[in-house]
Amino acid sequence: MSTIPRLTRFLIFASVAAVAALSVPDTATGQGVYLTGVGPVNRSMAGAGTAAPLDAVGALAWNPASISGLANNEVGFGVELLFADVELTSSLGGGTEGDAGAAAVPSIGWVHRMSEDSRWTVGLGLAGVAGFTNNQPSGNPVLGGAPAYAASEFLQIAPTVSFLVTEKLSIGFAPLINLGEVGFDPIGPSVITPAAETAQGNRKHWGIGFQAGMYYITDNHFHFGASFRSTQWMETFRFFTPSGLVKFDLDLPMIVSLGTAYTGFEDWTFAADFRYIGYDDADGFSELGWSNLFAAAFGVQKRMSDRIYLRGGINFNQPPIHESDVATNVISPLIQKYNIATGGSYRFAKNVDLNLSYVYLGHNSLTGTVPTGGGPVTVRNDVSAHSLITGVTVRY
Image (cartoon, rainbow, N blue to C red; front, side):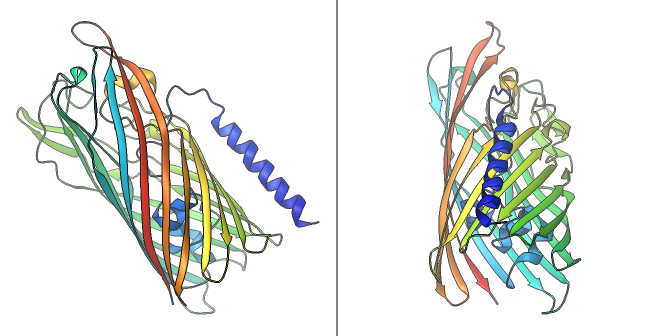
């Protein structure tokens, strides 16, 4: 059978799956607190990487089994600068634009085959996987004229092992160690505390979880991958307030990822990922009204020469936040409909690549009502963002 029909079937399958994933009616859209990808290479593929291990950072992030598919031992470093634009307006008149500045998101990945003929591959990943920042100045009537701040960041450490069961099938496992920080000022009124008050002294908190996966390569250039990332069980977050200690349970939700890739055309890699994220079953997010969601990511890589690789991709998402939940998410509007990504790599030395990518989070808005003493107030959040990611990959 020729490669053209196989590729056509792949593209049809990817398109139909994307339409199915996005066909649920949405009142708001977003992948929520999770980033859609990790590191400059994976981000330039819009996060598609469960069955397309292009570098250590992306492989460790989405599928521990796929590190067996890397051609070389390697270590990669990256940093992402994320600039978010958030505008909060209401029927009370006026509004404010957030001033969160640039958020820096690190990523490090190391992968090593134990020996040339070994079935074992080990790795270690360290990356920022989730978070947000919103910093609203004073003057917004829906916030009582006072400034408001909300932020979170979650760093994940992933010691990883992969075993090559056959020449085509590998399985992998990674215990996950998380370090997270969440801050709100004021901290209420919300499901956390009934009255608005300053919250100080919130330290970083630890959490644990795991990720398991499988990766399979067929004889006709198709690659398939699947991974399960468990709920990341965080210790109870503690906030010091003027009225005493406030506690709140907040766990990162589980993620189920299915991926496919096609490498039948010389110098080309096509990848598609489909994900389910279980916000409704995660402590904290369920209390805030977040819903489970599906996401789809599509990416392509073209090897232009021995030194230059170009990439692009797009990511679509269902909503985790609904109009009815605006009151508990006014200052944390993690909403988005799509991300467009592009980037590339330049091999400036035999075993060293310079990686660069750019991601645009398309403009999206969420409108709902917030109860006040004078009756319900209509509130609208408008969100967009730009990310610039750079890094280096070293093979040995």
